[in-house]
Length: 187
Image (cartoon, helix red, strand yellow):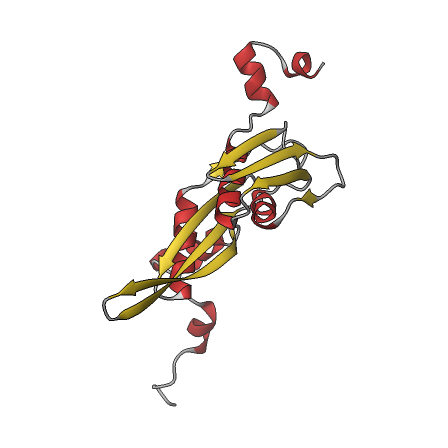
């Protein structure tokens, strides 16, 4: 019998999670979705000529009310995307969602971009353009009306969307702040 042949049953099992394997980390990461909104080539003029680098704008969300936007810069596209994902995960926000839409209308501004968001009835879908659509879909919002005004820069539109979603309040928090019940507010 050949002793140099590896045991096939150990190859099929993969890493043992109790021994510090990566299986647990992969299962936790599967709920997060990433979407690259923009990759831009940036040129810097230096003494020896031109230096190329890349900037990526990435949105990360779990579809259950958490979303974040990040920017990554690197000499390679893959490195810029990885840095963007890491930055987006650091800037996660919780979004107030009511029946797959937002609880109330909100207007948000980020730099030169202005974004108007309104709740929509069931079956409307995500009516938004470009970067705002990616933010809403990854946040788990299924029905929303949004209009981008001013600058159409993908980074600023995405930041305006995150800013507006962070300003949303649920009916429960409003009722608690006013000392009322939810039924009193809705009537």
